[in-house]
Amino acid sequence: MSELTDRLKQQLLNGANRSLMQDAKQHWYTGSELNLEETVWKNYWENKGIGHNDVVLVALTNSVTYSLVTQSLWEIGAIVHPINPATTEIQISELEDQYHYAAIVLNSEVQELTVLSDTFTNQPRLTTLHEPEVQIFIRNKHIAHLPEKPIDSQLAVIMHTSGTTGKPKRVGLTHKQLLAGAFHVVESQNLTSDDSTFILMPMFHINAMVISNLATRVSHGQLLFRPKFSAHLFWKEVSSEMVSWVSLTPAIIAILLQRDEQPTTDNNLRFLRTASAPLLPSTHEEFNRRFSVPLIESYGMTEAASQIAQNPLEKPIQNTVGKPVGTEMKILDSEHHEVALNTVGEIAIKGDSVITHYLDPQPEAFYDGYLLTGDLGSIDENGYLTISGRSKEMIIRGGENVNPLAVEDCLNVLKFVREMAVVGTPDKIYGETVTAVIVPNEISRDHRHQLALLNELANEQLLPVERPTKYIFSDQLPKNATGKIQRTLLAQEVTQQLKEA
Image (cartoon, rainbow, N blue to C red; front, side, top):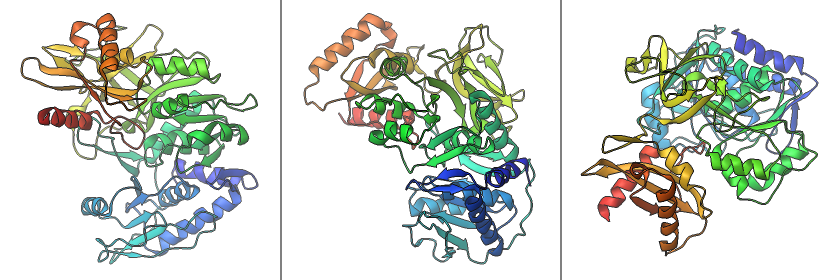
């Protein structure tokens, strides 16, 4: 076994008589019950000839089953490719052309894969859990691979980056990298067997897979699975289930702020942490005013097996993402020279959880052993990192750089703004112009008063080059499954909309 699979197995064995995981129906499972189900999964794969280096597609909603399926596949040396369960059959077919899956695991409501019926056969197995049975499609004429105990350097998962600034990249993470990422979370959050957390973010993303799932399991804590976030149940269940911490997105934080519910005084919550997208300072300030719960900002990416930096629990600094955890970090200029403190440049990282290459060669993404993240930031004299944005998201207007996050932070304080995003759109004279897309709290046909307030605030607080020249009101912003705004897609949609206007 790899150290990762060994530690996951030990959690179940050591907690044989203890409740370790709770499903969406609030049924608890002991380590003994979970170990039985995981062993049945492992035997199932072996009987189907699934083994070393086979790639298995997993498209499930958050569940106890999800955690056990991945563990069982890792134990036999297979590679997990987790994707959004909402992925269409046509999209799965396109992925199959690339990966030639040995098996495909889908939610219970998917009874067949019509497009791939000649290639895969549905071969379900009975579950020992109270959760719905999943659908398993085994490849016809699959060349059986003997199960082989994995080693630390073996590939464990293939994940696609979110692709907010371009074509998604294929990231391969080893057993060692996943475990290192989990350990960094355990260290920075002081996780112990006394801790418990909800898994609300999707398991097919690195945040939930490592930060919530693996970090909790290797620290012998408790996991409570929920298929999705519920705003009206969140604070109630945090108290009733005595949850000690939760990983959330800024989008979820914003939703909580729109509601009247408050955490009760008898909760067990140590902190909430936020990642996966920038948290506006104004949102953080409002959260602090409303709730008496520490909100810890952090920074991570798929390529680093989740966490890169996190605010220390004992001394968080608002508007920063904290200090590097388990990673070496440099801030570089455009010529890859390290810059001075408090100077913005590209964030470069390396460490035991960080990839050294993409599955598709992209040598330009690395320099001197460091991964060039494409994110812009600065480090202060106390070692705290502040994120300034994405290098590819910077708007270049007339040769001057405009940081969209700075514009958003300024204008987002207006009460009628539910959320907003600033993007660059083509301009014949300046190359790009600053365009703000606003989702208002209330739909209105007449935005003249709102436009006046936006322009007034922009003129007061923004440099001339930063002031939006176009405002577009919309009922929603395009986002990925973790709530991150897809800025490239938004810019394309807005550009097309302006052309047609």
